[in-house]
Image 1 (cartoon, helix red, strand yellow):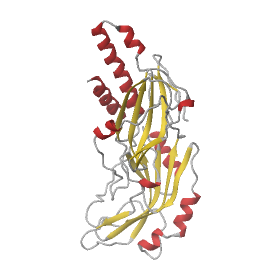
Image 2: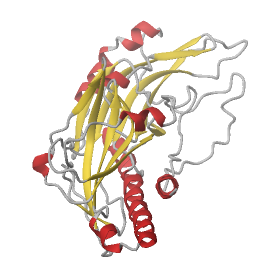
Image 3: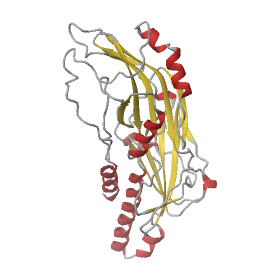
Image 4: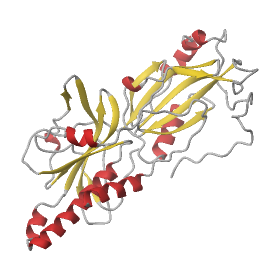
Length: 345
């Protein structure tokens, strides 16, 4: 989402950042490995549960040493042969997976859907939904409504992209005696804490007992403009950090502040407080790091001076045969006033 994320400590420059700096693969290799996920196969809604503040607090500690609310359902949809909710979309005829994924109606719905203002389309009309480790939440709609999906993304902390698609689901929960029931059609919207590309659209469906869930009309819209960080300038880089999971620049802000606290403590012990001021973290660049075109997490670069947009020349790099890409790149200066502003590139 494009609202201010960093409360009172930052003035956003939306410049992608500084110095000839390669991606620190040691940071990436030492990070925990997260599994690429999407919504559970039987889910029709799932609140956003990522805690950005807790993640930022954890990042600060490491350097130093409102969700979408959905109501409960009165029917246990997980019971054997229980009727499944929603199903507002048109059915494919005949009621087969082939007719569903090749439906000209579903193709028309997807390619004619508007891209909301402030977003740009990553891909359209695929037969698979996104799986990535930056999954935030899910909602099911009565129509293929890209604007409503965008509004959920804008309301969710850290959401920078959404995937809207048409899914063939069972009309009852498959079980013994109803293992391959007639289908219903659902319009689903998933929220993501990173930009996503077609390479992440790997969920082409799966089985619920003998019923085959498949997907059609899958579109992804990316929030905000994408810019890359830099690869030129002075050696003012202080640190680089990598955090797998949803894109969260608050982690970088917390790391910048924690580094200053640590440096001041070290300088005080040595009796040289001026050096701590000179080397203070005053600027950081945060961006989504993608590995082999699949968004993986937040990469932070911390600097002792601000850098202009003209230094935004690092667009990623190869490591062997694997490309490490950069997107959703923003940079911020640290300030002490009680206001902040960030603009998108």
